Structures are given as C-alpha cells and as structure tokens.
Image (cartoon, rainbow, N blue to C red; front, top):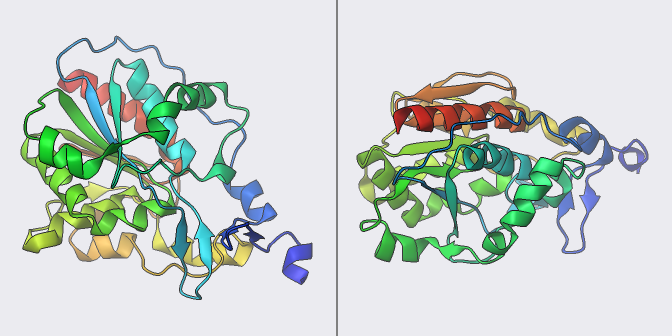
Length: 283
C-alpha cells in the first residue's frame, strides 16, 4: 500500500500482468523523443529491403511469478526505422508465426509527430506481419533485395526470439551473406539463436552495446519491473565472448563489422543515424 501511495507499485493490467509504476514511467519514458530529422541522400538501389523481426508476445514471467506487460519498445523500434526510411529503405515486418506485433503501449511517445506518423504508416503491416517461418522457407534464399535485418528491443524480445530456430536461420543468413544486423537494448537476446542446432555463436569476439543486467536488477525497486528478470542478457553475452561497450543504459552505439547495436531506448536516435549512414556508405 505504501509503495502504491508513493507511486512505486507496478500498475495491474486487465489480463493480470503489470506495467511500470507512475514513478518508473516518469523516469523511464518520454512523450517526445530526441529524433533528428536528418535529410539523407536516399538509396535507390536494388538492396532496399530491411527485414524487421518483432516479438508477438506481451507478457514476460518474472522469477516471482508475476507477469510484466511488455512487447516491443516503440521508441527502440520506430526511431531507427524513421532514419532508415528517410534514407530510402523499406521494411518487411515479421513475427514468429504471423501474429500481430505487440508494442509496449505505456512507452509510446504520444506527442512525437514523427513516431506517430511512421506508426500509422506501417499500422497495417504491424497488424498483419509476415510469418517468419514462411520467409525462411520460401523467400530468404531467393530474394537478394535485402540489405539488413533489424531486431528491436523491449523486454518482449527476450520471451520467444532467443529460442526461435527461424530467428537463428535468419541471423546466420544475414551473417553469411554480409547483410547488416541491427539491434538495440534487449534485442540482442535474439543472437543466442545462432547457437541452436549445435551451431557456433557467430558473434564471439564482437563488440556490442546491450542493456546492462545490473540495471534490470535495480528496476523492481522503482516498480518498472514487477520482479526480478528470469535471466540476464548482457552477462550471458559476455560469457560467450562478447565485448560489452557500455556499462550504463545510455546513448552508446557500436559498429563492429556488419553488426550495429545500441545500449537502451536513449540510444535509439543515434542507432538510427549510425545504421542509415552505414548502409548508405556501404551500398
């Protein structure tokens, strides 16, 4: 009751899950982003497509059994996509089974006209994404018009994507064909799929920016999470030979070979600029 009075208690949702507390929302979300409306020389070549892999899951179970109302973080997804769209790239939206993309609605920057515009532009694609399994079976090997794979963050990216064999196939396809892979915050949890079926972890020795486990462990104190995370991402990647480039959930971004990563929602704008400029220069 005291935590509720102080605004530190996670908010109970209709489905039994919990979204962040009032204090956590005040500290961890924004009404308007820091989007720089950069004017790029648009790409007009053959490799104009970017596959964006979203989670279709909403609720993540904490160690205490409580469900965190999550999904894809809207800023981490839409801000980089704004830069990439403005640079001339188009998106193929996918989820594991073709169910609609789930966003963390409580993190939506409601006063950001640029983010809202792109969200509305892609609304039908978010609600009717392609089936990632179908893409792997019927499209991936035949379509050479892709330049990158983008996996946004949000804690939801740690629910299903790290165990999805098709995600692993897509990441290995991108790696082997020298496409760029872009991810942010908790999105790199998907990289663990490259070890499925006995494969070698393809990002061993890479530099990355990832959301720190140390911060995830602290956020239940302010009611951002309703409990402790079921597993930690940054330390898991470190144990596999990844060199972590950030210690805080800040604006850090990193380019290592064909991998582009960002540390947190705060890095979304910088990640978008880095990805857009890198792809334009490379192509």
